[in-house]
Image (cartoon, rainbow, N blue to C red; front, side, top):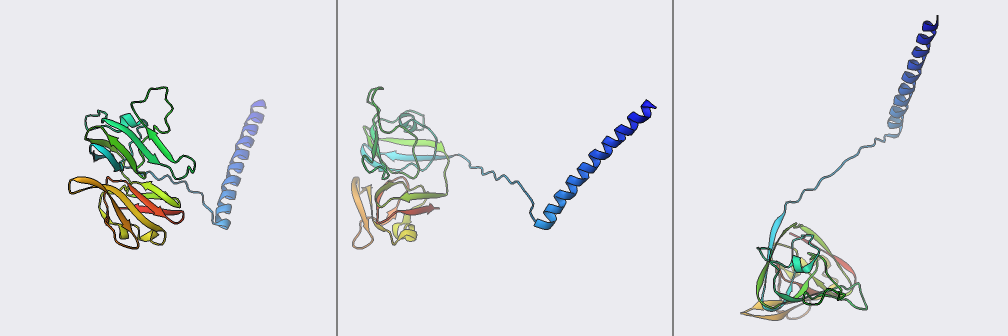
Length: 230
């Protein structure tokens, strides 16, 4: 008799569980049927292959940009050659237009460790840099290249990089912000010597192309996003 009662109780539990599962299944199906909503989880994996980047740095002042994102957090280690030996540079400067009080950031490897420096971080492909070299050297790094980069230009002066693999005429490269830029300036090698070149939207210009590896001053009359693609 006791065994019979136990068997009946077990069957009752099974029936309750089955009905509960059936109720959940039906209710879920009804929600999707009447609302048309179906929850789908998707994960998009974007795989980028490392590439090599190199930029020649001459003796003295260079206004350059570094197209590869390496993630190396110290400028002394980041500015190295193909043998991973640090290049002989005196200082690095970059300009932050968001800081109205002190927009210049700097790093000098010869200063003592206790010196508080305003910048010691990884290179950003969207920035231009002033690098003063004590002797010539070629920057070499393996990192990630991006075929699209957005430059958040602020009203006034901006020192930017040109993270592209190809030269492009300035008027074409800046066509999306043609109503907002006023001029472009770059310090480049011309006929064996370095000099400042200038591009003006109105008037004569000595600078016609964006060239990979250089940095550029761009003056805009309002905040605007410039998208570089190649």
